[in-house]
Image 1 (cartoon, rainbow, N blue to C red):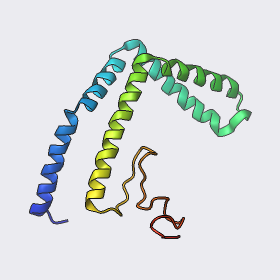
Image 2: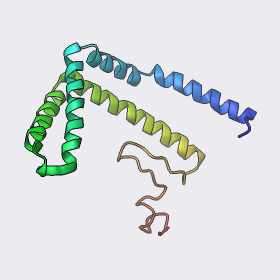
Image 3: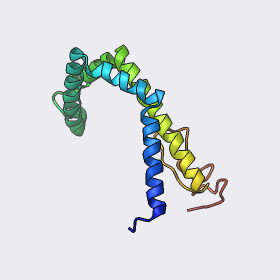
Length: 147
């Protein structure tokens, strides 16, 4: 790929957008929430234990209910997940993550649609679509395409 003045301009604008996003209130709130979770030693220990339990859960899932530790692991994973879900700091972090994802999705949609209405922009949110067709390609939707 040949770097042209046009590419350099795009890169400069992207870097400017990154700086604006990084200093946005949404990202600052995320950073505060993340710091609150990962500066709490008890919570960090609990998250690490949950991560280890998730690996055990994945191993048990391969064999399903025939695994000798199936019931124990299933119960433990649900209890630990609930414990983490009910933690105010973890809940605040998850909400902040969702807000940052929404910001990224919205910016991606704006950029994609600026290029063309038919550009497909994948997002992490079901509210946004990654299809240029209103009801999806292959369905004969608003774009009248079909697979």
